[in-house]
Length: 182
View 1 (cartoon, rainbow, N blue to C red):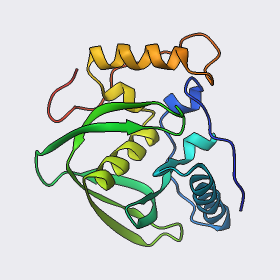
View 2 (tube, helix red, strand yellow; view 1 turned 135 degrees about the vertical axis):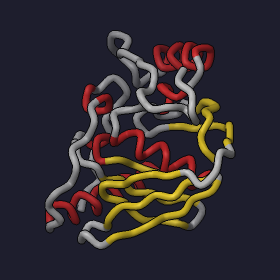
View 3 (cartoon, rainbow, N blue to C red; view 1 turned 90 degrees about the horizontal axis):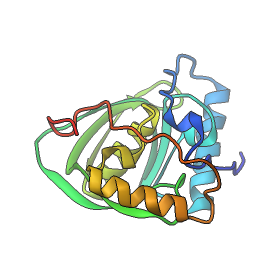
């Protein structure tokens, strides 16, 4: 178990879709422990394997007393209700921006031992599950913003003390935003 460095915005691993987990072994269990330890150390709500530079479809979460992990998650949405509120990312420390997400989500996947698991989330937990699943697809939460919010977010990123390089490529999400692309 270890606390590992979180990859910062601009790192190409954050824009690359992660590989499906096919082997449920001690190495995967160690990854989940490392993700959990790092999340706890960073005091975040969720952390995906790509944020540690590991391109595997796994993430951990801890929101409102609900903690766990999902491997190879698939999300579904039981209704069309949306929420719009502040969202942050450990790969963009200290920055929070209003982002639209679905209000309710059902996340199905596997434990680190390969057992099927389902997590039903509402509100902040739903937001977290969607955020972390996006990381596995190479999508950042700023990719989910409308153009005006995205410009403001990029301005804040360029001014952030941890940012020190050429402006990274920001792209529009390849996934439909509640039935519409932006």
